[in-house]
Amino acid sequence: MSEHDAGWPHIRRAESVTMCPIENIVSWSVREAIFNNGDMSRHLIGFIPGKSGRVTSAIQTFCPDNRKITTLSGRVYTLKGMPGSSDDGQYVWKYWSAGNLVIHDIDVTDEYTRQIKNLVM
Image (cartoon, rainbow, N blue to C red; front, side):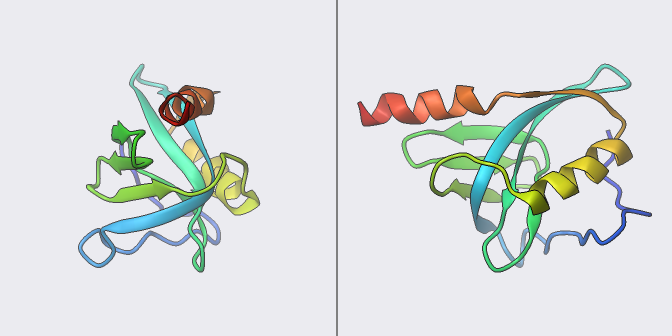
């Protein structure tokens, strides 16, 4: 799977991980993507406050006790608030998934929220 952005209207690349290694994300959700070559990966979708919608590189680790997700790029995202949907994030997902040849995706957000809730109880 390649993560290119050529020809994606109005979508900016995220700052480099070295410039911005940690981000807060709101109105977040997680999707499992199935690509035309059979590969699968999970991606965080949401809104970075003060910036824009975001689709992350593939999720590598999830730590529910501190609500942190680390992605393939090495960036660490802190899940703020409850899961939800961001129009900006959905816009980016639409073009990112088409550009990366996603043939099917599944919302797996509940798997993550259950793990967070288990810690609270």
